Image 1: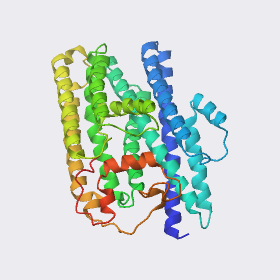
Image 2: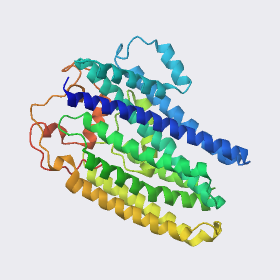
Image 3: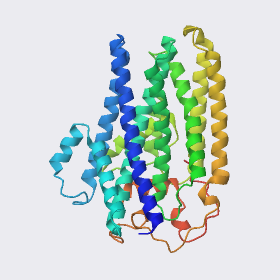
Image 4: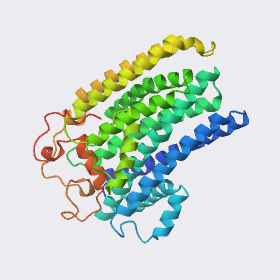
Length: 400
């Protein structure tokens, strides 16, 4: 195996370890905060932290189990189905997948000439974990971040474990978005992987655009804790209707598809997520305007009622910082898609075939294919099939 290929495999192994460590670190931060709230007599706050943690974990295990059931028989070895079911019942299904990916990655890296099947299976596992990590981020990490900010604003003080949770949450969210976007590219031979420079810019603009949204919701939650649930439910129902009207087809069967739609509606409450092919730029613009209008309304509400919050909090600094992050993030996003996006300067090989990363069906190519992620990749990059046979002139609908 060439040195460059071994270096790439080693990099993937390191990223796998770091991703799993980030998940465990974020989990530890949430449990630490819940224990501290309980010790301080803030039982409602502790219950909210644990409730968000539990709901996200259940959803994550459901996704993982449904995908395992839908995968081809024998793909994941001879592990008994009952043992896998027990692991998911004990909320260990995601960690089992992480261990499985690490084992497969080590197996491939240790081989001088790994088989195409082993390479494709390692990609297959990595793609599922990237998707599960993204779901966990917006079902648990983003709500937890909003909650801890609201608690800090209400109490008028910030504890060290809260700052620790904020840092791990922001890094975890941005990491998940970047890892997911990189994973989508591995599904398509006509799209190169993100380079270092574009990865940094992509990481930054996701972080900077997410912060103002989380801040706006946190400020409203601190002022009106009894109404934030109604606000979320109202927007979530609208977003769920929008997802349903786009006719998603991601899960193995129609009943489990609703689990996916419910999750996507939650993601859309915080950030953009493309679920259907065609007119991506138009839908992204509509969603951006919708969230921006809602955030402005929340900030206006805060400005007219900010005297309700403890006077020790420098509220005058929150709005300029949030606005600065928003405009800087928007500028970096425009820079990324105008100059740093790989499609701006890369032409694909029309004869390229990339195993599990190709668009061939399983009947045409017998390596393990993660078809659910390939469908999403086609939604994000709708010109992928055409680009495999013609040079890239520029991507318009590939906006994340």
